[in-house]
Image (cartoon, rainbow, N blue to C red; front, top):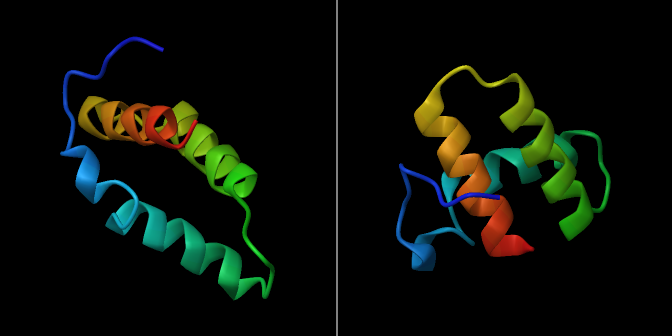
Amino acid sequence: MPDATHCIPEQFLENSALISIIKEEFNADLRQISQSDINKALTKKMKTETNPILVDIYRQTLQFFS
């Protein structure tokens, strides 16, 4: 994936609000969440997102966790 134009510092990615929201969505289903689940959710959100800033942040987060 190409580098993102919009990004946040890497030290904040692991505990970002984005990851917290995804974990909460999975916890609502009372499931264990894996890194694969997070990656799939980020990919799905990235494909449907129209805001280029959020797309870049999703891409950056996927790269960080890959």
